[in-house]
Image 1 (cartoon, helix red, strand yellow):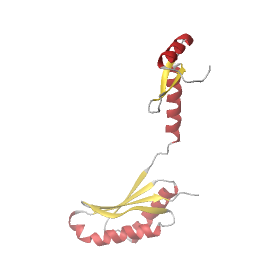
Image 2: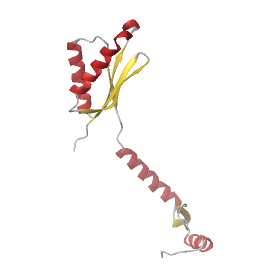
Image 3: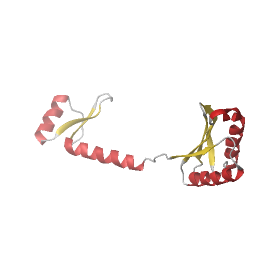
Image 4: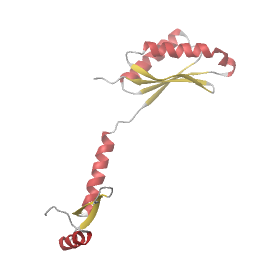
Length: 148
């Protein structure tokens, strides 16, 4: 098939002569770009490309770790090991301190706990969002560092 510049009527006549469809590939171009192809085959190829792109896209997994404002050292270490495992596996980490009832008066202790976790996980992950109080929870996000 020869490549060239045709008027709309010429392109329509050529596509009917070949028994194929005239498909607009790039409507925003000046002049618009069209191809004479089998439209069903074009749609099939496009779906195949989209599916391949979707398969290559990485899905972001977010794992959560919950602390209390007065979390004990042993419990903290236990949860920190889980956080290390999550970051090594490539998942984002959402660490939060949940304040029950009147424990909201220990906001500073919760923030210290989250900052301590961030500093101890510094070589594995980067803090995406510093500790922020939202209602009864203080939340912090840590993203895994990419390996180069």
